[in-house]
Image (cartoon, rainbow, N blue to C red; front, side, top):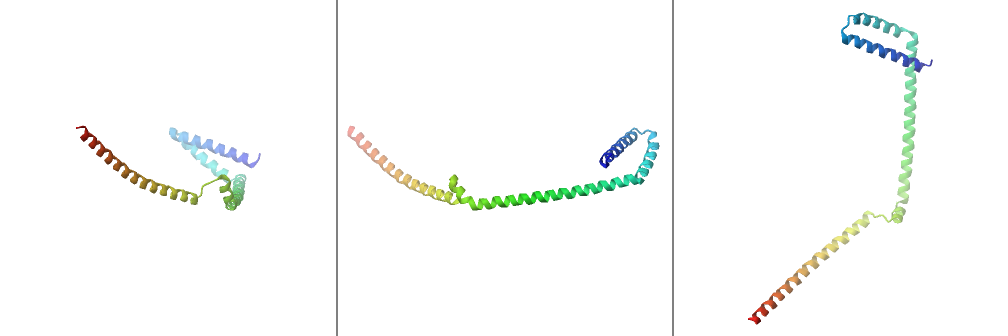
Length: 155
């Protein structure tokens, strides 16, 4: 058996013993005290075995190697991502004018010009509205005057 399988079996046995321990503790069974004493003795003897100590060292070594490998992969992934981002940014900087022109995109300058034109149209419309209102009121006065004169003539 390889060390990972042995470690899995040991963990499973320990988990079963822990569950049994808590079950007996929760039932307040007098057998609990006897089993508790025996279990602590067994755990001390197992911990003193050279094979178990070697397995824990191997597992620690394996986890350290795994952590190093994961960190190396992360650094490599980050550096690849950074390089790709830099290339994309460089491409956008170099080709932005062409893309704007090809796709007929609006820029801040274009938007500012449109806003200026809109403001100018708004001003022109306001002045036209004022002059038109003045002419309409003048025409209304004339119509009222003509109506009054007609009504006087009919009398």
